[in-house]
Amino acid sequence: MLRLDRQRPSQPRRRPLPAAGYPAKAGQPLVQSKQAAHPAAERLAPAGLAAVTDAKADGSWTALDAVEELVEPEDLGAALDAEPDARANWDGFQGSTKRAILEWIIAAKRPPTRASRVAETARLAAQSIRANQWRQPGRP
Image 1 (tube, one colour):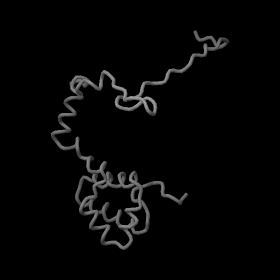
Image 2: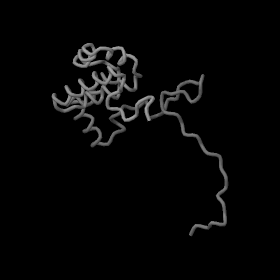
Image 3: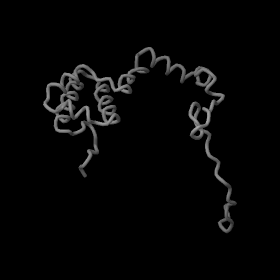
Image 4: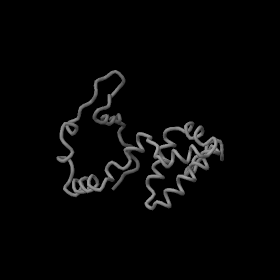
């Protein structure tokens, strides 16, 4: 039974250890955990290892690598160059905004869907509006 008349003793909170490969504080050496030294196969359950193997086989493991590097697809580049002011506005978007839009375009399953997303991105970029973003800067 929980007694409400007694308070818990105050103890200092322990700070969690930083993730492997990141310095604990500025100027300190990198933290190397025991897990960082082991290959991933030893840390994964068999089902997890099977999922990783399947993802690598079907290409979904590396599907977003180009998005993370902000590599612009050719069809998007052509659409941005075709619209006046779209290229300049697109280049002015933040990296996180570009990444979200590129991921949205790449995630399209059918070619007509991808084409419409590319066209919408270029059309809205010409107006300095970020496609597929629920929050727009300077708008309520």
